[in-house]
Image (tube, rainbow, N blue to C red; front, side, top):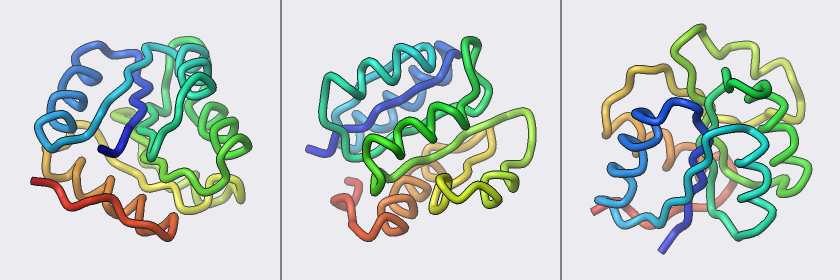
Length: 128
């Protein structure tokens, strides 16, 4: 079962994303801050990460950069409700990050996950 890390400081968003993923047979770990997310990532093995760009304790861009340092091929989805995410294309260590604008529908999330996996050169099992 693919394992996904969700890093978002909004409890409701984390809960919605986790439910969608669990219903579609993904294993989920949740973190409510960048620091907690990086700690959780260091303690486990993950097939992808979903990272909010605007976290309370740090920048999601910094978290993504740290994840990429530790796992260069990790499929990552950057989510934000505050701004367009076009600036991610300008940072080389953030290449192939899939951007998802809040609010999003469950199917948008699943499509972004498949797109992130494809960008990383791999494929997650199809959703149920």
